[in-house]
Image (cartoon, rainbow, N blue to C red; front, top):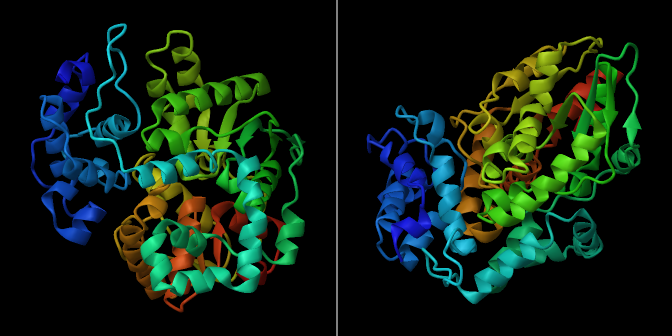
Length: 453
């Protein structure tokens, strides 16, 4: 297999060549922090990618080191040379997931990396055939809630045998959110197709409901719509929307991600909105990458870039719009967690904090871990449960040290991961989205409304 087949236009080789091996990425990398292994750092992984591009056979060891990457992108802002590591690691993940594209007609599709073990392939297939589809995900809710009612999730989590034989199942049961309190279930409901602006209309926005977000955290979507409406936005919630493709894109399934992207583009084009507001960090990052994802498709590249330009994280959009609705006091100490695909990938760190600080009587605390990944990272905590658990435990200790009443996040995966880790350590803490905190303030709810698990 030649490097040409993997990188026909030389773009990956050029991106890899930008790395000067200075080592600034090492302290920023969570897996290097865990193991101190060069090949488990961005610099080391770029070296492996370069070797494969140069024609070296991809080995199982190389595949393991590449798979261990969280894709948290902490190395990207840390790099003084501006290396686009995100582009490189996504390409490397494609080598393990999809045959190489752009081959001559009739040529056998080579693989740059050896195929994964059958068990790993089955698990990944189950994940990608379930999580991007809210209807399928909802089917899992009944057995999940039944397991939680009888305590089977706790029994399985404590079983050493289960941990050895089915670590992915144990991880899934461990991070699954508990059944919400009754009042939260009643408050979430199903969103209407259009939520009208309160007062003078300032904007018409589309709202991405997400996959995991709408199934496990419908109250977050409901709060998002209420806040946007209170700030003068007509909120359009298209029924035809599906998965945005974030899990597929960040998991190396580029063809699948492109199909999801085309459907999302069509959906929000028809909606005719000024902006597409996203309340999940990974989804927002993926939609903003649509122009790059579909750059090679002349029929879609312009449309993809246009929708990407319209995408805004919830906090980003509100910061641009400016506050109009009055805030009521919330006497709480909250600690805000930077989701990696919001802080590192989208470079959005100040806006969520500014929104929280603007709430009267709310005190904002910080996590003293430099924004290190919590270990959620898309499907990482399901396919790399040991590393994810260790990173989650580190994050939980840092969150607990902040001595806050409430943890605030901007990503559903992070919320589940950190809540589970805090529970494992016997220091449970309620978790809320930025939208839920703002919603409580705008509606004049008591602080206790956010502290009900």
